[in-house]
Amino acid sequence: MKLSKPAGRKLPRRRAPQGGRRDYHHGALRAALVAASEDLLLEGGVAGFTLRKAPRRVGVSPSAPAHHFGDAAGLLSEVAALGFEAFARALREADERGGADPARRLREQGAAYVAFALRHPARFQLMFRRDKCDPKHEGLRQASSKAFLVLEGAIRDLAGLPRESPLTPAAFGALLAAWSMVHGFAHLALDGELDRMAGQPGPAPGQMLSLMLAHVPQEI
Amino acid sequence: MKLSKPAGRKLPRRRAPQGGRRDYHHGALRAALVAASEDLLLEGGVAGFTLRKAPRRVGVSPSAPAHHFGDAAGLLSEVAALGFEAFARALREADERGGADPARRLREQGAAYVAFALRHPARFQLMFRRDKCDPKHEGLRQASSKAFLVLEGAIRDLAGLPRESPLTPAAFGALLAAWSMVHGFAHLALDGELDRMAGQPGPAPGQMLSLMLAHVPQEI
DNA sequence: TGTACATCAGTGAACGCGCGTTCACTGATGTAC
DNA sequence: TGTACATCAGTGAACGCGCGTTCACTGATGTAC
Image (tube, rainbow over all chains, first blue to last red; front, side, top):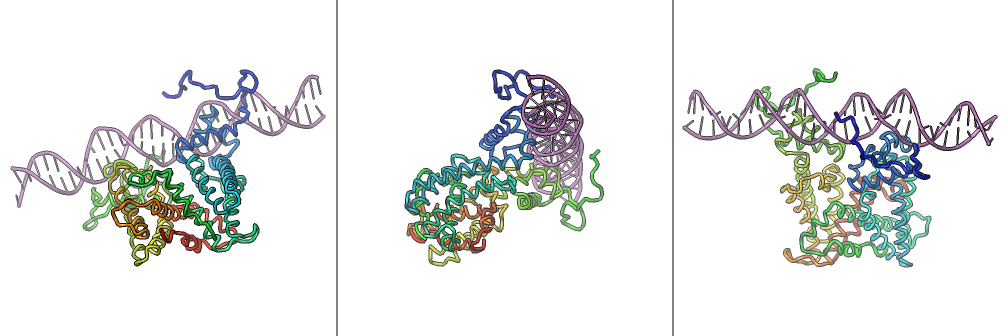
């Protein structure tokens, strides 16, 4: 029988806000579940996440997450939204590093895009797996559109278009080219295709990115 | 109790090679399992495939696939290898449509790359999920490298490099830019990002591709 | 041409596992008076 | 300031399910003599 629990391995599972007292209430369970989910994603990708593992990691019962998030999509949407917030921040910082030159801003954003994907592969993977998320999650929708607007801003300035006007077809093409390029590079790198290519004589993976970024649109 | 099977719903599960006789031996089980797996991938993506569903579809016992493929990775590797064969064929045909102009060949390949991904989303998804495949599968290795060489060929001709020489850094950058661009576009399209973008005023998804392909490297 | 036997191809019941979800419950917290 | 009570937050056992894998088995096929 496997019904008895493994003895003596109980980690202190809740924070004790004052002194050593154990609380029935966790106090910050919502945030703790999000953090645990990020760890799970990092370790096993989207497929490695389950709605049981996250509470287990926090030391809480399997039914606890339902209280805060409903189901898996609810929890993952929260994680993805936080990912997009950080992503948008990274893109904005890169954009500022580009100074007054829109072409340089675009290249800096491209480098930051790939860097984010490689530094946070789990977040990145999840962020573009909307099928795992709740399409009605407002925070996710807003955060992702925030990130997109940073890219669109640089394209707009490169094309000399004012903020409100619709994009011209040429500007649209440049936006798609830039976005697709860095997005594809990130995927190829994460899927191991670039390592496989590096078996042949050629530049090291680290140099590949800057060689490619030379082809980000310079003018519109 | 659920032990009894649903009555009267047994499809004829094996081919009867001569007349109506039912064989104990399937005759073409290997191919049938591969075909069933492709259907499963199409319906539910990589996550929708299981090693039990494929034989169930063919009308064969759950332990049958082990005989031919060992495990899930073995079966999926076969599917991925066939996918890469078809992919390489599509790229080669596109390359030929480009005639004597290497830049045009590259653009045609780009269009074919995306078209293949959108027409065979399940195959495409699996082909770049090597974690689901057996890294030692020889057919898969060869088929994928065959596809890659079609792309490399056009880049080489665009740069005026002979077949055997290593790629120059500039040629490498162009190769990465072209590949990443179409690969990223395919992913963005399959993940629904382009549809989401199409909510705003802008070109229709069908036009997006050709607007982007204008940015495929034209010279090296 | 016939027969014995090895090998091949597939069966089907059984295993233990982790999953998502449900359910009646209980301990802690906040609020009204 | 004290008390009653509603609400909130989390428990833990139980459910039915589909999964991958194992196992002894058996029917069909191919080969040697």
